[in-house]
Each structure stands twice: as structure tokens, then as C-alpha cells.
Image 1 (cartoon, rainbow, N blue to C red):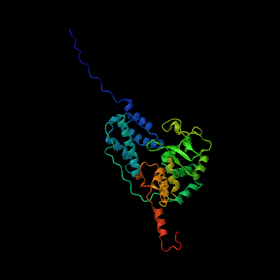
Image 2 (cartoon, rainbow, N blue to C red; image 1 turned 180 degrees about the horizontal axis):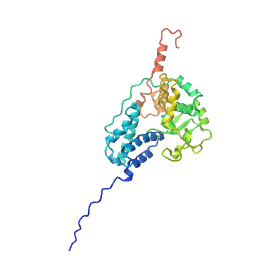
Image 3 (cartoon, one colour; image 1 turned 180 degrees about the vertical axis):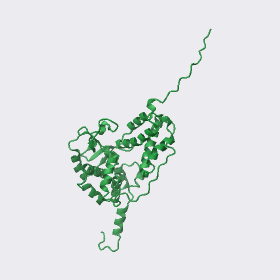
Image 4 (tube, rainbow, N blue to C red; image 1 turned 60 degrees about the horizontal axis):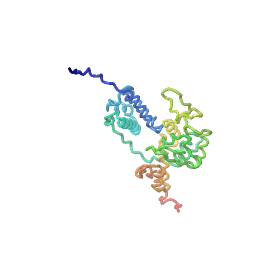
Length: 321
């Protein structure tokens, strides 16, 4: 006699695993971001997404409406700010798709904004020199500004430097580029004279430190690698460094708005182009992968226009030789 077994009741549907929740996924994603300043920027956007969706919400169920609700916070912001937060959402989405946590693209309805066309963004060299040598500004800021200009590096690369990355003898530092490659940036004499004063006796930890000691616990506690082992102070953040530069440069800016840290990179490359450096030389300095990317940096602007006009002025009494 054979016994036929009948199927039992269906098992209850399993809820989302903790590993696929918003909180867990965001934490894993941020751990995969190597640049500290990029990680900080992404964290702001994704904290908003976590609030909108809910900390235990499954990543697989994210919708375009939730992404739109996140971006509503920056509807009135400048195009660059909007695009920065949208890039954070897009990066998280791409990562989640690679991890098989998300099958759709909730960012598909959102579009990047075209920034308003701006004129010459290079800062005149004379004004930069005045800014760099003004003792009213703190040593940390003057070293940072000079280092950004000398190296023509991205601000996040320089702010991510540790003392161990510096090679003071050969005036160079090891940075991790946008694509993750290890590259070297180089500085000139003025920076070389100031750097030892900034470092004092420190041999490890972030080069540029915040003003206060880092919290040791709580949501604002930084990673151990972002804390100076001697002073206990954390790494200087991009938003704070940008604010200090804009504030300090507002007096020299004809529009009284102040300049951005990225304009130091732009100015360095444009000044080199004005001095006659070739495109391959500029590529070596900027570390762009493609020459075409240099176009926006080497557009000769106001200073070149003024010089050409003065040299061609028929009323001038002394002709250039």
C-alpha cells in the first residue's frame, strides 16, 4: 500500500533581509567609496533617501517617486548642487544594481541641470598672490590654497592626504585619482617652505585638520583614519574648506561672492597655458586622461584679452620688444 503525501500549507512570504534594507545598503555603499570627501557628500544625499524611504525599507522596492521626493529638497538650489546630489543617487543606484539589490533605475526620470554659462573662471595671478601672502589668514588655509594651486589637483585629493603620503624631499605627494589610480602631484618652493610649519612634529594622520577634536562616538564620529593620532582632531571637510576660501576671497572678488576651491585648479592650468605650456604638458600636470578634457581649463580669458589689447594699443609710447 503506497502513501501519498499531500503538500502542506505554503510557507509565509519572507520579508526583506536585513542586508537589503536601506540602512545596511547605504552603509555598505559608503564603505566602498574610497575618497573621504566624496563619501561625506554622498552620505548627505543618502541620509535624505533613508529618511524618505525608511531605514528598514527594502532597496529593491525603491521608486522614482521616492527619488523625486529626495531631490525636492534641492529644487531651488544651483545647478551644480542639484547635479551633485543627483550624482550621489545615480552612484548608489549603479552600485545597488551591481549587488543585485535593485533591478530598476529609480533615477530614470530625473535629469541633470545645465549650469548657467559663466565667463572666465580663472583668478588673476596678482590677486592669488595677495591672498596667499596675507598673514591675516590662518597658516592651514594658506598652505591648502597654495598646495591646490601649485599641484593643480582636485580639492578632494588634497584634503584626503595623510602625512604619510607626503614626500617632502622631492616636493610631491601620493594621491588617489578620480578613477582610483595612485598618482603623484608636485608643488613649488613657496609651498615647500610652509608645509613643515603646518605639520610641526606630526608624522601620521590627516595633513589638514579640523579646528576641534573629533567626537569619539555618535553619528558624527569620523573613521579612525580621519583622526590625527597626536591631536585627536579630525580631517578638515570639503564644505568647511570651501566656506573659508569663499569668505576669505570675497574681498578680492569684484563680484564680492568669493571664489571656489575648484577655481584654484582651473586658474593654475589656465595660467600655465598663458605661459605657453603645451597641451601634453598641461595633461601631465592635470592628470586628465584625455586631451579633450582640458578645453574648459585652457580657454584663455580676461587676462589674455587685456594683455593683447594693451600691446596692440596704438597710443602706447613704448612698444614691446
